[in-house]
Length: 285
Image (cartoon, rainbow, N blue to C red; front, side, top):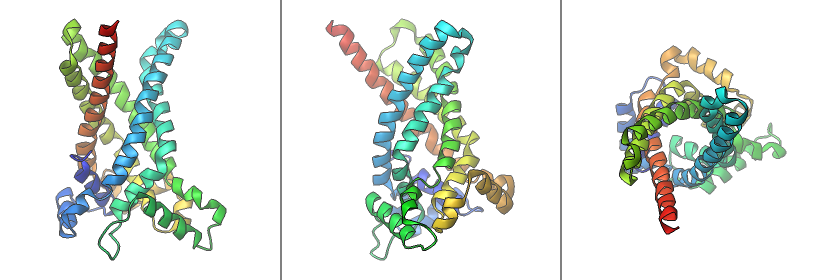
């Protein structure tokens, strides 16, 4: 989380300004203060814990259930189980934790207040609601809906991201685990999972970069009325008109640089913990 945080800040900075390199964006952030590279870390941690806690266990549950179901009824559909299981688990995690994701993105994109200290997660969310309710064109009953602004773009990115990631990760992981065979231990489990996850996360991040750009654009939109009316398609067309194909892949470098290690670390540690618990349970019997 901390090791890839500066890439995440750079990604959002670049998404907000089309013709900007990662280096110049990081230099700009350093000029505003070294700590700005880690702005939103608290929100990132607050987001990561519940998201991973929902996402990975639900993926395992959906995958195991769907594998049993397809093996008995539709054997030919079994290879597509990771795609469906990953998409369902990610959708559930995204819908549950999205307001924190919104706060994290806005904390990274907007400058600190006059005190020089960026607002926290809850203060950011309260400021969003306060700003929405103070706008005459937005009804108060729709205020809380603003906390899920851009979730359509998030799902439009995360569902294909998860589908690509897991459909790539599972065969690579099985191949690497097959090379180790029965001599596998905690270290080999970590290596196989990290390698497969790193490749899968990087590939998925590159493929879904335009959708990530659209999601970020919608999340950092300051006009609440416009933000509520924007759609993913409209945002993508707007980005295309602003800068063409290059604009759609703005920030692909930091996105890939963040996704590969992040997915590798999260999945490998999760699988190692599962391996250790399973091994301990097996030896205790």
